[in-house]
Image (cartoon, rainbow over all chains, first blue to last red):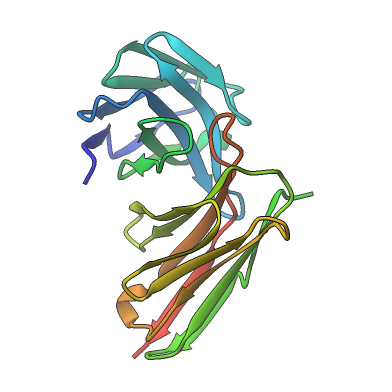
Length: 112
Length: 108
């Protein structure tokens, strides 16, 4: 299995608090992605990175920011969490475009 | 309009049955991925294909690029195949677009 670790795996927090999710990989893959998964919507792209300090927005990027200061880590930050951001968040990596993506185990985030 | 449509949304089968899950998409693609998500939540890549057919064990994936359609077949289904199966067309530009998944339950 691809070496991808998401942390934390579960988090409960309150509206208005900042939250940072971490994705760590040991595969030296260039591409990293953050998705959210909600019932009825499937997986939706939040942000992705195509290299260190190179990131771009996905289809549901409002309220989220990302950073990638080194190849192995991709951080997702909710500056001021809202209840609509309650979701399961998945990180994925791939070696190149048009290659399979390997997924982390997900982070279940609840915002009360 | 959804770019990716999967059918059926839910499927219950008896052990041993032949299963087909369909995926239709509206965008031009360079490849299509099939993923499996077990009840525990982990997501695994099953296939990536850009033409024809691929086979891995009891799983077979086919794609018709001209008709913008792909199918995932499971032969001799088993309860351990119970999962959500997700198709994801790959436009080759950036990240994938995902279908909402087909929930499969295989009963013993």
